[in-house]
Length: 290
Ligand code: A3P
Image (cartoon, rainbow, N blue to C red; front, top):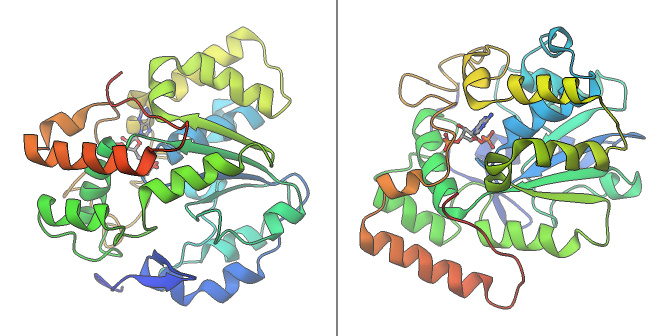
């Protein structure tokens, strides 16, 4: 097991070191007809939307969603950790149409997804909650560099020196191309506020219709509490050498505004400043409290 390797680089995007070493296989990857891509900046609700999409495809059948862990049902494209099948190995063993997870930026996503006109569901989350969630995730997953203190991680995050780089570039670039491509752009805060409304958007985007009682089942099964207790979604199937949930659970809090418990007034102001600067000139905006 590689412990705390330095970040690697793919066309200027910092990514997890072992992921960068496996990049040639990601570049070679061929998307298939009907594949759906779920893309996010890390800690923005990837697992949540993945479970929703898989359940929609299984017509709300909970038993079918139990056929494998979330990382088997929705494989992680660029994942690569020694001694574990890589994302592309898992994906290449499944016939399309598949649901594929990635955190890649618009610029680094292999062209094959556009060539095959794959649908993309992007989920964005406000930077303060992302930062807190990512800090705890970096602490518990030794495939990331040591995050240091919260203050040190905050500084690295503002400088874009964390895995997947600048949060603002990521959310802005996907926002920019959403109208040119088949992309559904969702917000974590909207999903928290009204999960039914957001599930209906996903259904619509996937050209699916499901009766109300099935939507109700999907809602129940994808609540934070249900997913926290579900061994197929809470990542307890991953060895503790990769994710040490005794340091911080994967399903941590699942709320908007936990940043209030982490930031000093001055840290919060620095993030506000960063946000104002980075978001000026776009019509993209985030809610920090729901
Ligand atoms: P917190 O660490 O703030 O609790 P990702 O799947 O992109 O890694 O995102 C993980 C974040 O999404 C974690 O945030 C996790 O608790 C939250 N999450 C996962 N499932 C959720 C759900 N059903 N409802 C709300 N939040 C959820």
